[in-house]
Structures are given as C-alpha cells and as structure tokens.
Length: 140
Image (cartoon, rainbow, N blue to C red; front, side, top):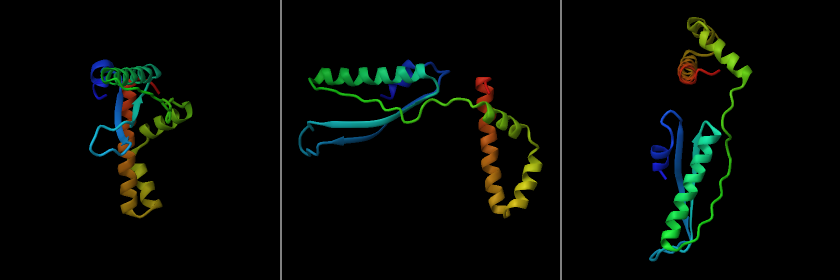
C-alpha cells in the first residue's frame, strides 16, 4: 500500500495512505480465514483520492487472486477534501498581515504570560503553515 503514493501520485500532489488496524478471526497457529485491514487515506483533490482508492482495491484484489482468496472492500468518506472558504481566507489574510507586536501585547493583557506564549507559539506555527500553503498553491 505504501508504494501507491511513491509510484502513482504526482510528487506535486499530496497524498497519504495509512494502514492502521488489522484484525483476524483469532486463529493463532494457522493462517487466519478472515482478515480485516483498516486504514486512512488523505489527499487534497478528488482525482487523487479516486486514484488512491482504485490502486488500493487493485492491490488487494491482486494479492487475494494470487492466493485464491476472496476480497471485499469498502471505502468510507470520513473527511471530505478541504474546501477554501472565502470568509476564512479573508480572515487568514488579515491575520497574516497583522502586526505581531500588537498580537503579543493583546495576548499578554488577556491571559497570564505562559498561556500567552503558548497561544503565540501556536499562532506563529499556524501563520507559517498558512503562508506556506498560500505560497505552494497560490490560492486563497
């Protein structure tokens, strides 16, 4: 499964395939008769998501066919692809252009210094990430 991203997804696109759970029917000293593998995929475009699903299905079907096993698969959309909200984009643009010293002063007035520093650290990270995403995509 891990080769799907490295071999089939354009390096410019972002994608993740994670196999995070494996359950069997409990047979300990023989090959299990039933195995359930769960995981997660992440991507930013519907096209890449579809590619991940198709490749995962083909790999599972190929392995099962090779060993004479049956496969069923179910893809559940638990977190749809992110959409850029116009209002959120405007707010983020204002935050990115906001004077950092004013933010420090306001945070210091509203809460104790330790908490203010934690909030500012998170804000710094968020601002850097937002700027990074804006630079990569050129979209708001």
